[in-house]
Length: 257
Ligand code: PEP
Ligand code: MN
Image (cartoon, rainbow, N blue to C red; front, side):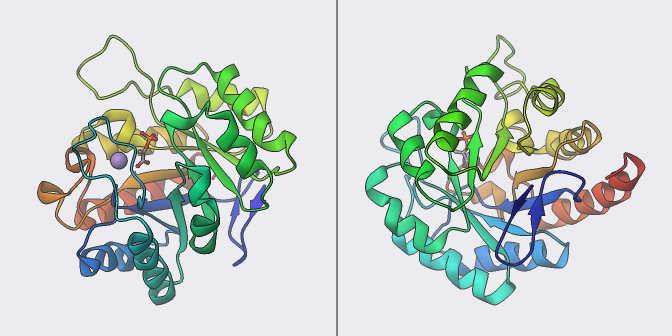
């Protein structure tokens, strides 16, 4: 069980936690705040948003850097939500630590061993996303890299793996939830946004993840998905998000969460 400064706990018999927000933090602070307020009202614990974005194309928007971190801090101050954001480079570690309650290591860096060891020397909890072509064993070994340096506060995040299937951006491996529960003591959450790449699939896959025993959900919510600077196709609106949270809250007790 990983515990945060404000008493939020992830894992064990605790209720599922919810981490929501835009893929990347954008110039428009009011959009971020709108999502953060909706998240708080719906009982979420974390605001997500990338300040440093790993983009496939070097010509795509790659994040606002410290400005984004400051926006997240401001939204945290206004809502009380904890902040989860990605760290891509050891050089930014001190800066990101100033703002993040939970440091995200992205799928593309799951085997960046120097980065893993660097966050392993901290006490800040780490959210380790599964590499898009990583086996569960490789993923757990990456978690081990972090823990072997002394930081045992690791949360795993299944975000879909690459398969031959093209109907979805990735293939959500829900069996990873069951496998991790058997193989490891670490909490595991599911990201149905990157796993599907399709906003209309997000709600049903979030429901399936909770039914499968996930300790939480990370999901992309944007005030105007059609015009999002990153991952609009998989981002849901605050309205859809509110509907989803209503359904998740009904489902959780039925499956013993
Ligand atoms: C993200 O969460 O914004 C992200 C880039 O995810 P992933 O590393 O899983 O692709
Ligand atoms: Mn994204």
